[in-house]
Image (cartoon, rainbow, N blue to C red; front, side):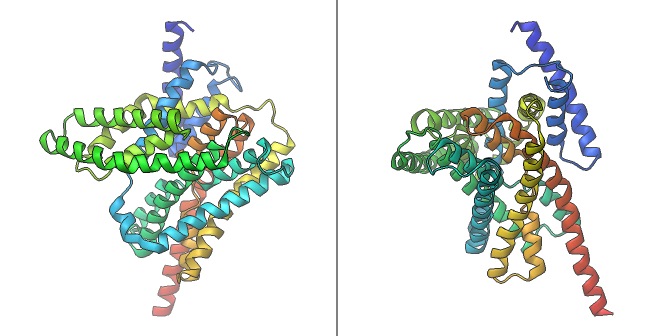
Length: 397
């Protein structure tokens, strides 16, 4: 691919993703959905203006690392410590139930496979995609209703954070099994060793960054060093421990999330991600989505994937909340607030495509789940809260 072709492709991607992103926002859908649709339109499935290439794959890989680094930076460790056992248990059920349901769904459509076979891990990976939670849409809906800081809102936010941490660990373990000849014990040992290294290295790196932050606050050297840390840990994770590179980037963000300048670093990362790397990543999802294999089975699977993906979060999180003493309505709010999917689900799906655990034809199901859950969750939450308000008014009258 020559230089001029690369420049033209980048220009097309940026314009198309921005235009479709704005249209999506006007339709009350997440902008990432619009950027994915932009990739579909300009890709080989429709207009054929751009073909997937190694260059675009490389840029998208940088984009996904920056996105996960940013997600780690936005983690609030203080809130995690305050939430205690309840949010952790809700998050565990919010991972376990979708994981099992997604695995069984794949097997229902494509057959039951022996444990340890490649098809078995493909089924498990479908479940792994469903473990992800994107709480940004929920957070905005709760903020608009003034419920973000109440007990239920705080529980949803904290559970979502823990959910993502557990989901990343599940992804790491499943990816470790991508080779049928993998030693189960060695995969687990490597995963544990990486997180031990992350803790030890994290303490040292955090103290170094804290000293730099005190001496040179709000200077560009801090986000530059932070980005270097994200790339370094992403490399170490995959190269030496067989752990997904996005896990390393996420850990880098968590290491720095308690810095005074963590929000400053996050804003600088957002500039890079928002301007070029993010649009290329989300467009690349659309570029790689294939419709030539679209048939009745895939369509039915996609619809079932959406239903199972949404209900498994509601049932898993809501049931555990009920067990922990929440009222039925509050349990339903928690379950509904946890069912949105977004960037993390896409990142997990893209990772699976890269290691051969997911076929491109299944991106249709993932995209549908993201769009439908992102649009329906705020509506459901508003109905649940408005019904409670109406009930309180009737009692007062």
